[in-house]
Image (cartoon, rainbow over all chains, first blue to last red; front, side, top):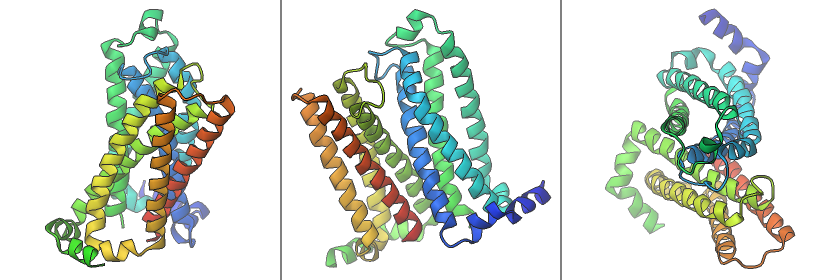
Length: 162
Length: 154
């Protein structure tokens, strides 16, 4: 595993993230803007799942309207995240906050896939309910907690990695 | 400058300045607050510019968006102040910090004025509302970019 991470650090991508004059700064800026678009728009789906706002629209309508925005945001965040990881793979691998972040991203991903599958089959009354059933509300709450934890760990990595 | 020197000598400034872990926690909370600010700003202006949820009246998006934005702003200002205090004299003189604060003030005042106009049901032509949304998006995204610049280069 460690050899693979060392190889990753030796790639051109790793070099750009670690050694170029502004590579690291530009990648972090792209990563943060991706975060704003992804988590910033996903939050509204979560709040609708909790029945807190946008209750005038169907849950599936809110989800579909915002999905392209958070999908693009997550794509940007994922690609810039991989490039940043390539630059500091061995140190990141040993960092506790990085490990927690990856586990929480996986949990958030499982939660999102479960909801994505569920939203296609939502019965009409659940889709239009101002206050959705408890399983949907729990999924919305979990998503907010997961993404807040990801942001928290991401920032903590900056203070503990170097 | 005396004010900044006094600020640096306060217990808050000394406590934050002497603790890297407290600085990291505050910085993480600051980023969470800023994400909320951007979330409110984005949804408000994306709706106004006609990019999403056009079947919803603008007012029904504006109210919760402003609440989320205000919550984020409160978190960001409190944590930002605590992070600013230990190095107030140095930070306040920085051009990027000044630009960040100017953009924050511009974006927040613009958003509040626009929000008030929409909630008072002032008659907006759709094209004017769209243009206002695009302007709002530009302001918030510029602020995000300058904030990144500040974190990474200062």
